[in-house]
Image (cartoon, rainbow, N blue to C red):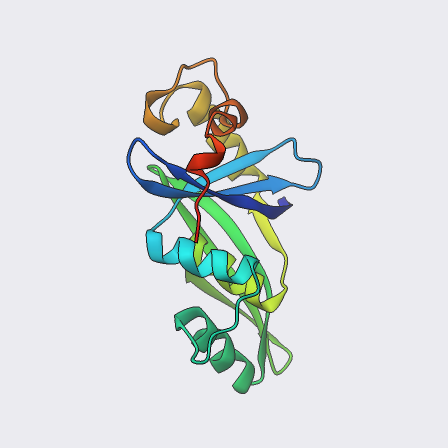
Length: 164
């Protein structure tokens, strides 16, 4: 089952200087932090801030290409978590046919934001992420086992928010 999520924001994990994409469900009860690259964070930030540039960047170019080929992005999905790596897919409709394309979650989110398409996460991925956090397997910078993602992310100060 897929859980609809939204981009809650971007933060900077200052211990490793890596941007974190923060997804939350509509009720803001489930949180999924995904550590991403700096360039992907910039692209997501630009989409969140509805910034237009005189020339298209990579995600803009890809969306323009999909559109010019009579396609449209239906949704971005985070579909699995394997050995600490999240996997995503884009559902694209082209001429009445559904096509699914493998991609990184950061690229899927950057494109979904530009296309005003929903973002969803497999409920099993959310459960795996929560379990990993409880077992201290994937917590940011070795947090306490009893602490959950929300508490760890809340400690990120306003100064650690990813600024563009």
